[in-house]
Image (cartoon, one colour):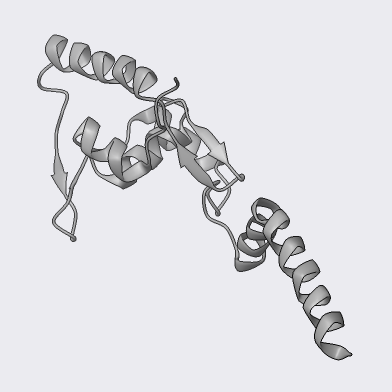
Length: 132
């Protein structure tokens, strides 16, 4: 049986970093991600284990590389690498996981269409029954 996919918050706790850093790693393609409804990001634990091993190897080889900065919100943040700066410069102003209210409604209708249609049919049947 496949294991449950992890949310951004769970991944941040698992990798011991902030949610913003997880999103940043997703943006540059360092962490494999699954999109659900083109909106919600989910992750597989097996793939995260590989990323975690890579992080541990890099920190073991070069322990001085990790220079943690503290943002104004008192959360640790790692400085951008040159690759990340280049990608950010080419990145659109809206990230892939930001979405509008219209897109939220579309996703809601898409994932709940069976229930919406069932509700409408039951409502019409009740209307026809009590009308007479």
